[in-house]
Image 1: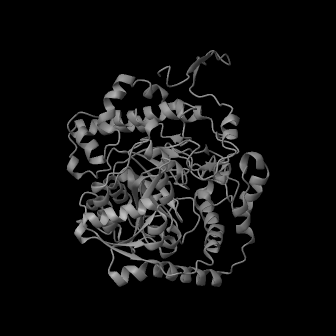
Image 2: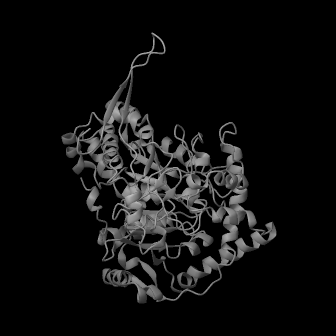
Length: 559
């Protein structure tokens, strides 16, 4: 690799255990560094959650992640990489597919392009985002196989648009050939088969590039701790300002990786804000679907009531493509719906006419956020009908108990059904708490207050059902009061500001880059609609994105 990109030491070790044993070559691509200066520099950060205790992982050796594909990546020269930049960087899926169709690009070079960027930035301690924590060692060969199929004339018109596109997955999504850790040392050897949505992606031809970091246990472990931190993967950093801006959580790696162009797209998961938050913080498009639209089988859970995976992409078009590639009825998920709700795939390329769009703007946000206020005015001038309203005050009492009791039960079920008991010794929250306490400095440097809260929550089954029913009703009334009264297509919010209400309502939410604060921190506009209105939200989001193309690639990750 290039001297200015990587520090590479090739050490030849002569093995002498037997005459048959040949020389072993170990490629050292990365050397752990002392992050104490960086940690100290954040001691006085105005955001208490960004006063870090550490940045790099104490357990993950990046050499184990990156060495297996080093020979493949090193074959791509810097000049060849530079020639690929205009073909791939920030390009949407249909554009990339067209380059492949017209022989300007191959699937192999597409994969190598993203791998090159990952190696270039993630192995440099001055630019690493601590985002990629696993790679599919077979991905280059899988791409070559797709190129062979292309040469043999496999009909492209029968392919899903996701075919051949390299995708990264949040590391709580079960994936064959890569461990699924949820960011926890307790699951660092968790080898599993593909989750349902990964099966769907592979069936549609997607290439699984690797796994990305997350807020440990989907940010349901510690209280007041940094988002984007996991004991397994370390502290994920924001490409728009490393150690300056939060990454958002818990799908932190998915947001940062897409923003830095480490893959065509990524999959995140959300219980309440975990797709919307990192998408907004990293200026990418994120969709939290209606509960049940996508399967949750084979995903490390918080709550079977509220959890859902969802697509995170650089644009609305790709978001619709990735969402549609994961659709399908899953008999193992009690919330799964049999209807795939047609129109999702085409929604990303068919923007709704502004004159036909009716949106509800929240008065409080109009008064407190100038970027939101300006955006509302721009939408009006573009022809959209905007109704300003004040949502009703509704109780969110009991929300934490849903997470507590569901995770107590759902994690136990996941570990029983997916984890290998010979390797994974934790079988419950109680076990996980005890495991963490055995080495608290390494395993829980920020504590585990939320895990401990799970153990002390005494909510009964009957009480929990009442809480769920009340919150679903309250969440829906928060939005429906205006949606029903004015026949609105959606309510518009900021980032993940109203994610909790959308979560308990089980409503979908789409967030699209809205601009940047004076500090340079990204901010996004979030569209929230009724159940299974994903196609409509995508059409509205596409119209907004097309008229107001706000996303700007992070300045330090443009080359």
